[in-house]
Length: 147
Image (cartoon, rainbow, N blue to C red; front, side, top):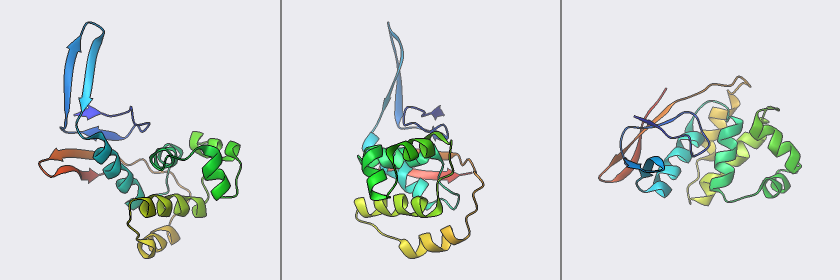
């Protein structure tokens, strides 16, 4: 398995879908269909029942192609507050958690607000780290397991 930390998350493990190469500069990793992989990771984050971590918030913001200032303007927060959330210095409010999930799902043409409301009403501010295991199949990347 390969721990894929280049995406900014520490809990992403790829079972396959990558190639390791040796070069004079050192070991290199080539990941297949990275756009689809990132979409599957983002959907895994959105669908998880735990509160979003700062790193996960940052991942979704980057996938949305929004700056800290732009997302802050949308949420009526400063870019400094967004930076604090992303660094884990401040807890992400439940409404901001819900908003980033909704924004991402809307950006890919999907919406599941009713499901999110059910999940979010039961959230507490306790941080849970979930490990995502992903595999590349003939049909593309898929989420195998969250633990």
